[in-house]
Length: 203
Length: 208
Image (tube, rainbow over all chains, first blue to last red):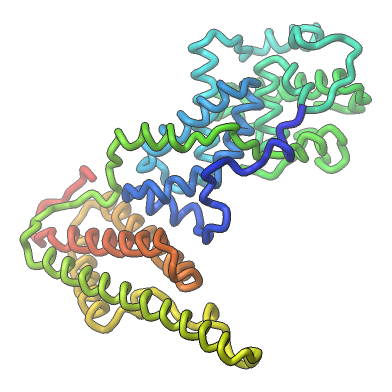
C-alpha cells in the first residue's frame, strides 16, 4: 500500500503551483476579511497533509475526503477563533481529528479509550484487525491499517505526524497515560506484523 | 507540533520510528475538494474580525478614511501600470539591442521597490498618520481586553500588508496580490477609522 509519492500528484485546478508564496499568517488575515481566494491558497497548501492524516486515521479514502472537506468548511466558519497560538496547520489537524472522531461516533466505529481494553488487547495481539493474517509480513502502510483504531490514531498522530503525548492526548480527548499505552501497543503490533525484532526496552 | 520522536528514548536509533517518521505526510485527494468546500462556505458569510466599535458612516473620520483609500487605490494602480510598462520597455529594449545586460545593473525584479505605505505618496501617509494618531488616542478609552484584541488585529493587518507588499514587489502583475494588498490596507484604515470614532467620553466597551 502506498499513499505517498505516486499518489501525490497535483490535483486538477491546483492553482497554488507557481503562485507567489505568502505566509499562512498573511493568508489567514486576508481570509478573515472574507477573501475566499486567500482561503483557497490555504486549502491548496494544507489539504495534502490533512488528507494524509484523515486517510491514515479512517483507512477509507471516501470517508477521509469527507473529513477533509468538513475540516476546511469548519475552519472557514471558525477562522475568527484562530488566535495564532499554534501553527495554522496544527489548528487544522485538530479540527480534522475531531471530524474523524465524530465520523467514528456517528457511524459506530469502535473506540478503545480505557486502560483495561488496551491491556486486554496487548495480551491478545491477534485482536488487532480481521484483515490481518498471522504470518504475513506487511509493509508499513498496510500494517498501520491493520492496527486497532485507538492504537492507530495514536501511532499516526505521534509517530507519523510528530505530535507529543500531550498534544495527541488533547486532540483525541484521552489521558496522556492512555496515549502512551496505545503507542506501546501500536508499536508492538507493528513490529509483529512487519516481522521486525522486538525492542529491547519499549516503554 | 513537536518534532518527530519515538517517545522511547533515542529517536534516531529505532528503525520502526524512523520508518514511521519517514512516511510521506501529504496525500492528495483523488478529486479536487475545493469546489465542494467553496460551494458550502459561500453560503456562510464570514464575520470579519475588525468588528467596528462605533460606526458613524457619514462622519469626518470615515470620509477621511474613504479619501485615503481613493488615494491608495490610485497610487497602487499607477504603480502597477508604471512598473509593468517599465518591464515591457526593458524587455523590448533588451530584445532590440541583443546585448548582454551589464552585471552591474540590477535586474528589474531586484529594484528596491515596495508597495508599502511609503511608496504611496505623502498625501496618503499624512492622512494615515492622522487616523493612526486618532486611533492611539481613542483606543486608550477602551477596556484592556478590547484594546488588546484591536491592537492584535491591527498588528496582524500590518504584518500581512508588509508581507503582501514585499511579495507584490516581486510579482507586480499578480492580480490576487494586488487585491489582497488593497483589501488589507482598506481593512487597516477601516479599523483605524472605527476606533477613531469612539468619543473620548464614550463608555468603555467590554463586549468586543
